[in-house]
Image (cartoon, rainbow, N blue to C red; front, top):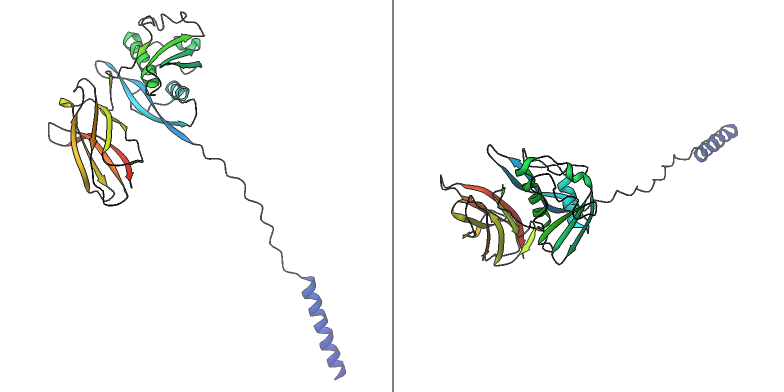
Amino acid sequence: MKFFMKYIALLLFFLLLGTIGCSPQESPTPEPNSPEPPVTQTMDVAVYYLKNSADEIFLVREVHQVERSKAIARAALNELIVGTPLTPEAYRVLPADTRILDINVDQGLATVDFSGEVLKANVGASGEALGIASIVNTLTEFSTIQSVQFTVDGQVDKGMDWWGHVGLYEQPFSRNISSVYEPVIWVTAPVANQIISSPVKIIGTARVFEATVSFRLRDANGNILAEDFTTASEGAPSRGIFEAELAFNPEAAMKGQLEVFEVSMKDGSEVHKVIIPVEWQ
């Protein structure tokens, strides 16, 4: 009996010893999370590229997202130089190795100093005139700029012959969107995701038959809250400016969309539609 009790005691001792020696495996201490890379903030800029049709060259306006910068005019112009056109068959006119040496804005006049590479473009007389317009229209998208003039390597007269046909003899240049054929309609106000109230002001340009521009406001469920039309300052083939107000009576805060379009004289369909997401409170 004593032997049996000693055996039990010895067995318990070894079991206890094994429990102490074999501690549970500790989980590795988690390393602190690596900081996530900062999210690049972006902004929209409008740029103007060239495009050829069967019998003429014209401009197309595109809205590109670029990295947010306080130097927004430089950012837009740099996108014009190195950005990739979104419109099929559209192309850049400024050589890709062109550098922007300086942009100075004084009382609405922007003076852009380019590096000498800007003079290497070779696009013919029509392309040269529109190439200049592409720069001017890109910069005059900003309310602080009404006209644009150029220097090359800091010299006023170095680029006067510019690309060989048009020249800079009549600078400064003012905004001219008469040769912008695409898109047919664009809207500058309201902007996407803007919080609007009644009446909402609608501003843009259009190249439409008889200058008639239609618009409507829908809620998130697709219900039409209001609709109307206005007349642009000029009709196709010219491009006109339009500005109108649309009153609406929302029942509650909601998101929706503003639709701006042309009604086809051929079949009554809605063409060239621009959709701007908006919300109201």
